[in-house]
Structure formats: C-alpha cells, structure tokens
Figure 1 (cartoon, chains in turn blue, orange):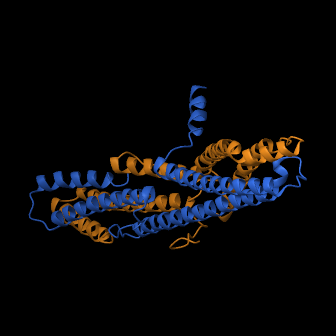
Figure 2: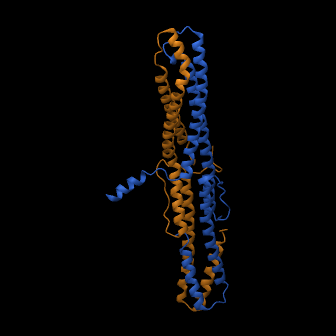
Figure 3: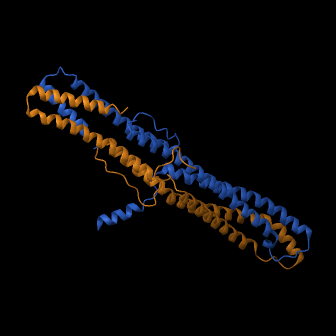
Length: 184
Length: 185
C-alpha cells in the first residue's frame, strides 16, 4: 500500500529538468510579457488619440466608450493573439528541432557504440540540457572503451607468455573479474 | 523536421505531439486574450453620462482614467497566460524531459558500475529510440562479455589435462579475446 502511494506521488513529479523545462517556460514568459507590453503601449496611445478625437468631434451617437474603441480593441487583441501565438509556435518548433537534432545524434552514437565505435564524439551540441546529456553519453562510452582497452592489453600481455604459472593464474582470474565488470 | 539520421523505429518526436502542443498553446493564448477582452469590456462598457457637456468631459478624461485599468488588465493577462503556459510547458515537455531524466539516471548507474537493467519509457513518452539504442548497445556489450567469458571457460576446461596444454589453450583463448576486443575503438 505504501509502495503504491509512493509510486503515485512519484508520477506526479513533472518538473524534472529545470535546464530544459525551465528555460522553455522562461522563453514563453518573455514572449507573453513582451506581447503584453507592446499591446499596452499601442492601445494606450490609441485610446488617448481616439477618445480625444471623439470628444472634439461631437455627435455622441454611442452609449459607452466601448462603442468607440470596439474595432480598435478587436484588432489589437487579434494582433496580440496572433503575435504571441506565432512567436510561441516558432519557439516550439525551434525547441523540437534542437531536441531532435541533439537526441538524434545521441541515438546515432549509441548505435555506433553497438558496432564498436566508442570514441567518436556524440556531437549533440552545446545547448543546455541536450549538450550535457551528450557529454554524459560520451563519458559512459569512453569509460567503457578504457576498460575494454585495459582488458585487451592485459589479455595480449598474458598471451605473449613468459609469466610464471602462479602469476599467470592470478592475472587470469583478475582478467575474468575485469570482463565481468563490463556492462554489469 | 527530421533528426540528423531518421530513427529506424519511428520519429524521435511525433508530429502529433508537436501539433498537440501547438493546439494547447493556441487555446491557452486565446483564453488569455479572451480574459483581457472581458476585463477591458467591463471597464469600457460603462454608460457615458447623458448630458452633452458631461459626455465631452468624460471622454476628455477617459484616457488618463483608463491607463491604470489597461495596465492592470494587461498585467492580469500576462500573469494568467504565463502561469497557464508554464504549467502547460512543464506538463507537455515532461514527455521529453522525463525520458531524458530517466536516461541520465541510468547512465549514472551504468557509470557507477551498478547492474543496469534495460530501459523502457512510458506510453506516450517521446524519444523512444533513445531507450532502444541504449538497450542495443548494452545488449551487444553483454553478449560480447558472455562470449569472452565463455572462451576463457572453454580454455579452463582443458586444464584437466597436462599443464602445458592448459597454458597453451589459455594463451590461445586470450589471443582470441584480445582479437575480438579489437573491434572496439
């Protein structure tokens, strides 16, 4: 029962990589704030002009201030929506492209690792979390390569001969232990 | 919008996921603009006084009066839109960030030398190819490791015979293992 409760709580955690999710949130917040500021600036200056013009013109054939600025407000609100949405969409597509590129490189490098290539860098880029993830994969691959090369040189040294039977047996067992530690 | 090398088993990030994100953002921003409209509508739709002079003065003074209302309504819009977009971003991007986080944990576990189990992401998670590629690599390493150990065990079996044969078989096995390992570079 306790385990189930813990699992339920764990699945509720959504904010796991601040450098990825946090940056996206900040970027969207900047877009919204910029859109709001531009809207405020434009509408404020337009209101000043329109209400003054309406006051001077006379013939007050309207019931409220809304009747005067209805079209103006509608256009500016539409502009705000389109501007923020289009900029947000560009950000989404950029985010997706960067993720696809970086993770695609990581996938390619892992597939190359399965074919024995553990030394070619992942090249996932240096942008935020994806770049750090690529470095993490490279570190795991290079550590694996180092241990394989170490075992290989030890095996070659043992195979070359000229070692006493006792020492040979000791190093043979150590070699087996070393092989067992690869991908445990 | 495909990756550097397209995944064999499907795209890293599905189009449906991207369209879903864009659609949710669209609804979110539309909602924000809708709220802004409602606030401004209620602020602007107060009836103007009936007298001509009063209407003139009301209109002359409306602009300075509306300025703080406009500022507050834009601030409310920004806060609401930022809040809901943040929640949306965290929730939707978790489909990518979650698997990345999980893979980082698995990589840390692998590098620490702890036993590593095969990775599988949840249904609906993106970048599934990453788990498949990692499992392929670890699987290949494990198969190689088993083969090297099997080669050495085969040589050990011959140690029941004389010492010289045993040593020759073991050295032969070591040469074979070293040659096999040469594919790793």
